Image 1: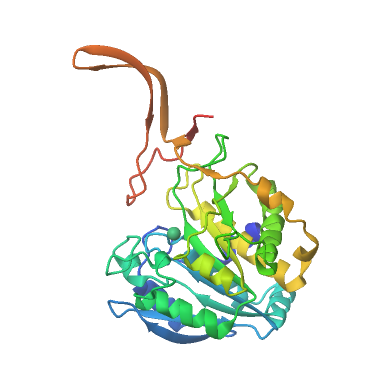
Image 2: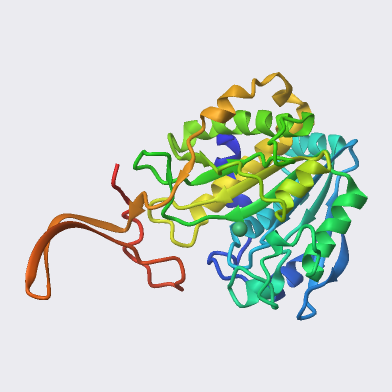
Length: 339
Ligand SMILES: [Zn+2]
């Protein structure tokens, strides 16, 4: 993974260095994607923005990756466009990309929620959380993902999100910069073959990530949420992996995490193509710490004396700037753990 992180800068897509990216940027990039990519319009969002399917590779193992079903979670979309640049380049990594494209058939759906992206909010234009629409299919965006999954029958699926900057990895003071989940396919949280595969791949990626962000990896709770696409996809026998980009020091626009995500996805594809994950035990998956809310603050001041209604008291005060911002976020870097 480290070698992929080192070369990310070479493939970094211009104009995508802030969290608020727009559909028109995606459309412009998609329309000039070179070989080996082929592009189709899969359908339209509520506000008539095109949702694209981008294919590459001719291998027997099908892998589906979708990003930004939550409109204000753009990191993975930006990473996917960097990945497209990597896959279409020609340099000393030709052997790697030839191998990936020979072993894998890739289907990418970047920016599944372009209306949410435009308005920089989680839900679609009707205010529906697409990730709670896997059964009802009330939204055109959810229906597109559902239809593509059934038609493509992916062996692996990647559900790519962003999470809050203030989650820590378990009880440690370290931010959860990457979080995983192998969602359960049913209320019994069965360990099906495909879910086991997802866990094995996560175990491999987790080990690699520890070299780069020691202690900075968490996982989501595996409580069954039947309306979520991860759970639904796992129930379709696709090994489904949720990856969340999270917070890191001095990274308010998530460009460090974008680079990390580039390494994670490329490494994941290499592991799938080479089947290197198949010998992994699943037990280490269960040892990954959970995301912990309320773990981190921008500033934490101990034993402050405050006064309310004429009465003084002493307390610890944690301050957060929040996630919704554009540009002015200079002190965000000092994520402090309460331990
Ligand atoms: Zn999300």
